[in-house]
Amino acid sequence: MNASDLLPLAVAVPLLGAAVFAAVGRLLPRLASDILATAWALADLVLLAVLWHRANGRTLTNWVGGWRPHDGEGVGVVLVGDPIGVGMALLAAALILAVTVYAWRYFAEPPSGHPGTFPALILLFEAGMCGFALTGDLFNAFVFFELMGAVAYALTGYHVEDPRPLQGALTFGIVNSLAAYCSLTGIGLLYARTGELGMAQIGLHLADHRTDALVVAAFVLVLTGLLVKAAMVPFHFWLPDAHAVAPTPVCMLLSGVMVELGVYGAARVYWTVFSGPGGIPAAAVHEVLVTAGVVTALLGAVMCWQQRHVKRMLAFSTISHIGLFLIGVALLNAPGVAGTALYVAGHAGAKAALFALTGVLLDQYGSVDEHTLFGRAVRLRWSVGLMFGLGGLALAGVPPFGTGLGKALTERAAGADLAWLPAVFVLTSALTAGAVLRTAARIFTGAGATPHDGSDAQTRGDHEEPEVREPGRPVPLPMLVVPGLLLAACLAVGLLPGLGAELARAGRLFTDRAAYTAAAGLPAPAGPAVSATAGAAATGTGWTTEGVLLGALSGVLAAAFAATALWGPNLTGTTVRRLGGLAAAGSRRLVLPLRRLHSGRLGDNVAWLATGIAGLLAAFTALK
Image 1: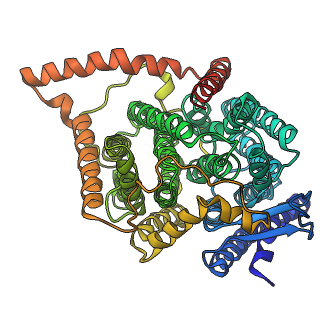
Image 2 (image 1 turned 60 degrees about the horizontal axis):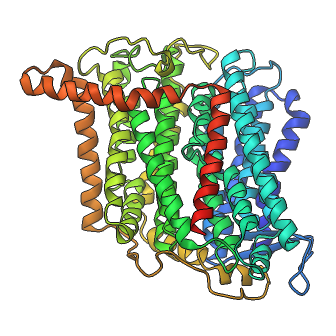
């Protein structure tokens, strides 16, 4: 069997697993269902690891059923696995296995008597993510993306007996479905222009036309579906609401890999379809997406700091990091892509671990409210609390975590483009990590002044419904082992020798449009791909003194932010009162309007979706 033959198997294995659970899941006892689901998830992870190893840094292609193109024209379904795409599928499979093990005996599952429902949905989710990461066809990418989205809606509303998850899932589903219609319309426009659905083929045929309003509209519409899933501002409103009500294992997947796939999709579509002649000028993509990334990172960090609902806090942290990932890919060069890929891998481990640890709090205390849990989890400080604090340091990008190395590489590439961009990385990662460290200190040590009980229901996290059969039971071993292993994996990403160099090669291959087209068996593109910053970025692949110092600075700032929140209210003196007054005035003028924007109303979310589309259309039309 050739390595390329493994590409369809990576999608077929979880699909087959989902079908098996749908057919016989109700006949299986819960323990047997858990064991079988774990074995199935492990099988796909091993298959993708073998695929990564045998690909050996090459781009693999499989025309399913042997339907290869003739004279550059084809109707077959193509799967294309370059190292970044296979790596994303591998990351998804690893998190699926972690979630499957974590969910052993985790929560009571409605409807009763159907223990196969959750594994079936999880494996279907995996099939959608792997298919999206590996497909070379734009329409199939849409299908896999929507399969992933539809399962995510179902998983978010898994507790159907509770109206809150149901409302969150409906909001999630409606907003993302509207965005999906936009993407489908964009694909239709491209098909009308080129008569093709393969990404490489569309890119080749666009070279026969000039960049006009149809191409700009198609690009914005296709991008909308991807960036809504990625939760880019102002498309992000659904994400914190969905995380607040989704079961904890589902949050691990949403923040760990699903939203990152939106950023991956945006980069893939640009490089393969729109980066050549007749596409979208690189300068326009760079300018618009870097601006959007900066706004997303800053807004996510500010809102993260405001939350006392731990799940919402972690969700806004994800939004902030998505902004940083967006900046990395919007540099439109190989170092930016490679640094972002490493950053995403490290972030997946840290963020999934933090959500898993939040699940322990929900398991033990039936609450995820920072103020309600003040000092209540002291007995868990050397297990859950220690890991929670380490997760916060990982989010800050402190060496030697993988998030630190990815952040350092992306910062270096960003700094070579715009000298002030590293400051955005340091500030936002410090603010989000500071919120996590503040929460850990309050909940697991009772540090600082007793927090006052505000009246803003939006940020509270008490009165949560327990997700377990026996609240207050001893913490099950998988719920401690899984976050520990995820944090260890985050650490390994930063320490494994050669990983940075391998991803640097993967980044060069990802941004080489001619290599992608050749791997698909198509003629070479008519012109060179345009690039906004090619040749300007640094090309390092490992730790540098600058990267270590910036990571350490983020960690120190995060600790300072957390300490100020914990012990600042106890300080006295004229200077302290003045600083407190300035902070209060800033909060009234900046933070309160932002919080009011996040009303949670479906109509507001849809209005912001329309506003974002109009803004992107105006920006790309002006810059094309």
